[in-house]
Length: 413
Image (tube, rainbow, N blue to C red; front, side, top):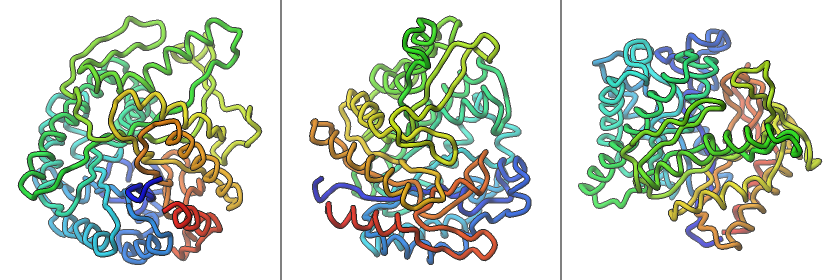
């Protein structure tokens, strides 16, 4: 790994700091009991100091839309100044900021009046995005959307996250509008950067999983795995290459939509965690059943996910067809055991190094995450953090994985 390689950690604003104005704030009762989650909004300086202990040279964080724009036509300048201060602290410590503009959450007014399947969502999001980009100075790396497909699966197909809709046709419209916003935001970021003499690096963070048939000898399992692999992993990549999004749900006609994102990538962010096995089940929605199996013998995480480091090599190899630099923008494990976390990290860093030796242009690795946080549907007990949080006292304590990550960075820099 060369000296320009980005070693970092990734976080998201809402998962650390909460927000009373966000759609998720009223979605989960845990957030009623602990609205400030880790109190990161007030303890941010203490948390940013942990980055120096790790020796990272980059930090990925998001801005919380509902704090910046708590009501439709109201901007909170103090919140914008807060995020600018984070950027300034990072730069003072020679840590490259990577800012995610949208990481799952929305202001309540947006999700109620302008949800993503409505075309009006585009103008509302772009006003927010331009406000952020025009205000934050010193940022070169931008991620427009974190895991747009996860947002669509949870918010529009399963209905397990806001806006809680179960409608595949609305999901497609929402995805189209999100990708339109990426294309517009890409152009807007480049236009602003030109005024400051910065060459920006703009991407999305795309969750990719290793996907395989439940039973290799089952033609239906193999067919479903192929369909899901294309939709979940590959269709977004093809849309960036061709300008067309092809959506194929199991046992439904394929949809082909033009989206203005062709070649609008300066790098590609890959979020990778696990492998999923897929089988045909006529009693499940879309006849689809998912399962995690410990085939490699590395175990399952506390969330029941298979540990499968070879899958990271596979998704990076496929993502390399984009012909842009790749950055692993998230990779981590939920576990209470620090030694298990070390083994996970070690095996996945080795997979990154092997990919680089094989000629794949990987420019960075970001561990998820810095401190334990709110993990969406899993609440507060999914311990991804390099630093453990006592949610009663808000004390941060390093795990042995924190020291190991610092060793990895130092030995490879």
